[in-house]
Length: 168
Image 1 (cartoon, rainbow, N blue to C red):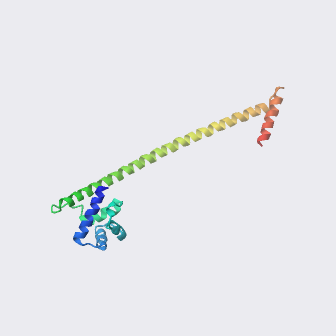
Image 2: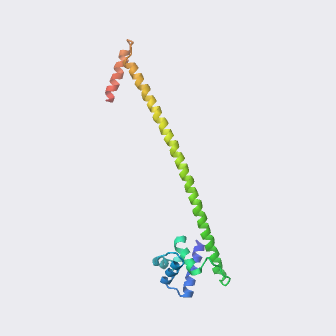
Image 3: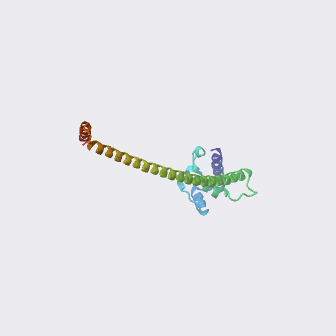
């Protein structure tokens, strides 16, 4: 956070030195091919904004590109400006690397999720098959008991019939 704090402080110094208005800064950002709202510029240049959290890519970077011209490090820049430009270039590069890494991680997560879904689906199908086999066996046993040819089965037949009546 100190780096962003230093950048905001330097942006305020440059604005004060050059006498830029907020509207001029918005126009400079647009001239560089970026976009930032006037209210965002107001928040960046407000008193005490150094301790406020800003999204670097959306707020600080376009203003720094416009005011400090970070893409071009010139020998006539003072050391602080050169250091800030190098820092901003490093941050931009690091952000791009992290975005690429995040995309790769998202793809890995999606692949893992899809594999887990497939495993779960196979498991569900297996369990459905097992339930169907169990139901078939139960039906066969009930049929056997209901049609039992032995004399002792009458009592079993009555018990099965009672339990079936209770379920209905």
